Length: 381
Length: 85
Image (tube, rainbow over all chains, first blue to last red; front, top):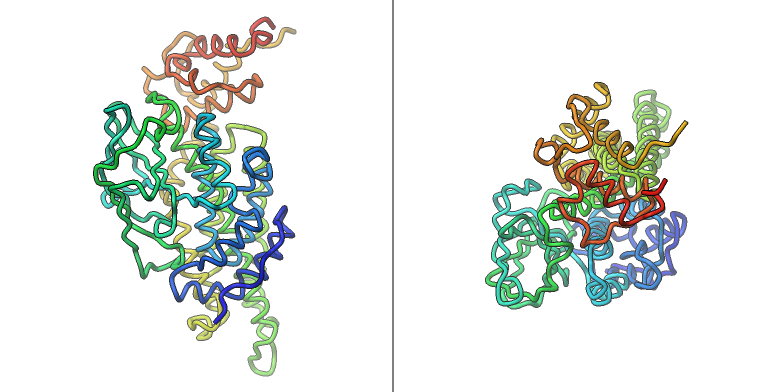
């Protein structure tokens, strides 16, 4: 079976992203899910479309895309395939971090490669014994000999099977540092993780670092303890924004699949869409898709404005969109009945993928704690 | 009516995030235990947006963010016109 369509045109906005996804992603996403990978041809098409890091400036090979539009583009990709969107998410995190914190030399070395998709990035934070909790990080980066030596194991690295460049968070003598580690550095070992519940084509891996020797330019951002957490916070914020966008895409995909199915599926000689209980489910999907999209757009607008409020706005958008995605994916399966449990319709994949959104880039429990803390501050001000 | 100074604006931002604490301009907010990485990021974004400055990596040192006074001093170095206002 052919897994991709012919070469695409440049994606510059939601409309062109939608056309790209409808042509190159939607028809094949279930197959990617089954084989557990996104094929190289599609990765090349993503590059041709300029989708890997369009927010990078023109001089770095990007398109200078604003973050509101980036959110719309990631929503469209998420509507088609959460695994591909996940690859975009982690690549975005690496490219943004290089752009925000890199030295001119690091920009020159990596930004054009990342913009063009010649180098694919992945984000290494979680470990076998620690998720997003940085206090539990046991991977170490020891300074010496004019450079760094990395030791440790990272787990659940999205895109890890395919990525060329890892952004690794490791414990230094003073704090947590962010390091750029090429996949081909001696001592790096990649072990695929298969058969996950959702985003099965996102090519997860466990990455081991065994006495990986790096130059001084591997460290990204200032070496002060003050900024170390900031690098991670900013990186996760953008990842969360992309996951929120992808979650909106899942809701939209649930709506489109369910509305289409309900329009032609007959029960008692009438289409499902005439049944009030089905109408209720569809109306809730429409409402939540719009609400989640607005929350995402607000977070994006604040990012484009450089407003500190974007961090909390992104938490809220991700929390709302991911929980709504889980809810509506379950209802989409329900509307499809037994068909919804089969591989013949996309909703089973959407259902599995949606659950992942509640866990990655900060679990929803952590998000609720953070959001509640903000509410308390606002109420007591 | 006079415009608030950079120090007053920064202090207002910090107090807004921690309304239950009594914080003055000279107080070390790190020593008070208020600052986590999220708030540190918000502080940097707030200063950059409010005073239209870009904080270079070498200025991203904890001593520049310990207090409203220190942050106002940073703003003054990066944007002398703000300091003069």
